[in-house]
Length: 267
Ligand code: APR
Image 1: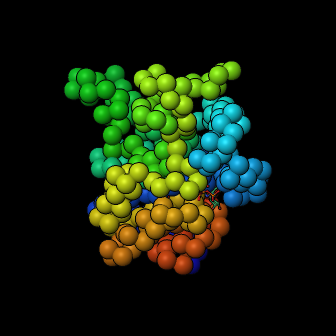
Image 2: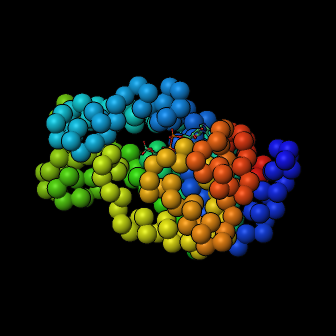
């Protein structure tokens, strides 16, 4: 089928869907300048995750692990949501029903949601929206963050959360209990937070349509989330530059960059 016929078929699926869930991966942030993990030049081509992104790495050599995450934060500081993030934010805000699930820890979906809600709120917004605050207005477009967010710290001991701060000479410590802080992300070998994963599956099981965008679909349990929609009788649209293990299950596979495909698909 031609690319335009695929796009038209996918647009019909989106228009006809009652509930939509979207699962995104590093590919949606590639056009924002955020390195992916497994592409050429991806993070795991240049660093060994075992040496940096594991609880053992933090226990063995917290300074090196922290310096790597501090470097990732500096890279992200120069990145902004791209048209793919913004199209998804507009889409879920417009539908008023949450459905965005991401594997990414870069916070770009959250920024796109807050910016879209602020744009919608604008000067003519009602007092209620203004009073409720930006997070409330953005709620439908805020992502379920399966792997956490690198822009937050978490205390290793008491689990208190803190906004990220630049790494100083001393390793960051918890303001509450003095424990060592770590980035609030799921490290290799760790389990996802049960309530977060349950929320993602609940969205997927109730969805008529799952959009899978920019993920190699090789890391579980995230890669199983789209299958929950399919098993419940829903459809699957994949947006990627290349085939993945999910492609053969896709109702429509759209080949192209997320920043170009998503506005055409969703706006
Ligand atoms: N538009 C759409 N897809 C893209 C783009 C783009 N502009 N650029 C790259 N891609 C696709 C690649 O073809 C690939 O399929 O995005 C995918 C990126 O795959 P990975 O680098 O493996 O990233 P991801 O799937 O998110 O990794 C999952 O693995 O290391 C862990 O915790 C990490 O959350 C991450 C998880």
